[in-house]
Image 1 (cartoon, rainbow, N blue to C red):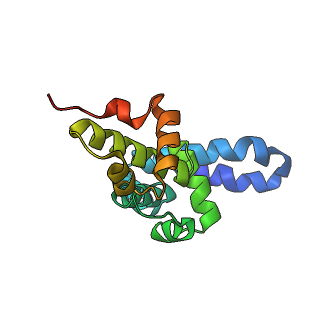
Image 2 (cartoon, rainbow, N blue to C red; image 1 turned 60 degrees about the vertical axis):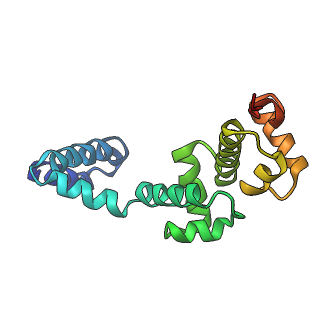
Length: 156
């Protein structure tokens, strides 16, 4: 590790080499730190406070509260991030915006409820957080290719 630090500091003598060499030395330094016997402790510290861990906590929160209206600023606050930073990290981690993720959670839960037993479609729409049955129908059909009625189990 000391060799890495010396090479990193010596780059000050050749500033034109910094863009090419510095990332490699930093990567090597990270390798030595993380492969050390205490590397596991370092990883735990980094992940415990890192942006990924905080976004994962917000995802868990969103899964538990998907039926409630979504406010990005409140969700970002649960992750201790600014709304812009949270949005960026959330999308990088899930490949969806928070609103798209919430919509997916609502629709998957609705599909599950519809498949459980003969239920009222409007009640399912309201239970998963939709304020409009027609909006629920449109989004359900867009997501699953059929109307909610096609997934209702009819008792025999």
